[in-house]
Amino acid sequence: VEKPHTPPAAPPPPPPPPATTEATLAKMSSLAAICFAVGSQKLLLNIRHEMVDRAKAAPGALSVSLSIYGCAYIAVCFVAGDNPPSFLFDAIPEGMGRRVGGFLLWVHVAVSYAINSQAFCSSIDRVVGLRVKVFGWEKMHRVRWAILTALVSMLSYLIANGIPFFKDLVALCGAATSIPLTLLIPAIFYRRIQGVPLFFPTLHSKYSFVLVLFSMALMVIGLIGAIGSIDVDWSNKTGPFACH
Image (cartoon, rainbow, N blue to C red; front, side):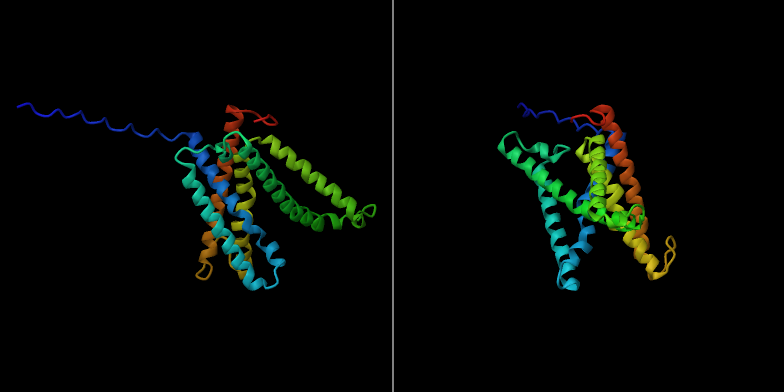
C-alpha cells in the first residue's frame, strides 16, 4: 500500500535583516515626531487664560483633547496597514480627495503657525523690543511688530526650505522645541520652586528628577535621529531648497 504523499515542509522564514544606521535613525526621529504631535499641550496656559473657570475647565479640556488625539492616532495606525508611506498624506490617491486633503493640511499648518508665532513674537517683543530705547523704538508698536513678524516669517521660510522633508522637519521641531517646552523646562522650574538640587534626587522630588533625566535623554535621542535623518535624506534624495 502506497503511503500518502506528504508535501515537503516549508523552508523556515529568512532571518530579519540586521538593523542599519538609517533604520535606527528613522526610529529615533519618529520618537521626536511623536513628541511634536503631542506637544500641543504646551498651549495649555494660553487656553486656560481664556477660560472662565480655569481650575476645573483647563484640566478637563486637556484630558479630552489628548484622549481624542490618542484614539485618532491608534485608529490611523490600524488603518495604515503594515507598510504605510513615510509621509502618510502620500497614501491618498490622486484626485479630488487628495486636493481636499492638501487644502486641509495647508489650513492646519497655517493656523498652527499663526498660533505659535503670535506667542513667540509677543514674548520676544516683551523681552527685547520694549527694552530698546533708541529713536523712540519702544513707542513704535506697529513698526516694531511688523519688523519682528517679518523676520520670524523669513526665518521660518529658510528653515522649511532648507529641510524640504516634512517628516524630518517635524522631528527636528519636536526634539528641539516640544520636548523642552512640554517635559524638560516644566520639570526644571518645578524643582527650582521646590528648592531641590536639579540633578540630585530627594524623597519628595523623585518623580520630577526622573522626568528631567527622561526628557533630556529623549531630547538627545530625538536630535540625533532628526539631524541624522536630514543628512541621509539630503544625500539620497535632494538637497536644501530643492523641490521634493
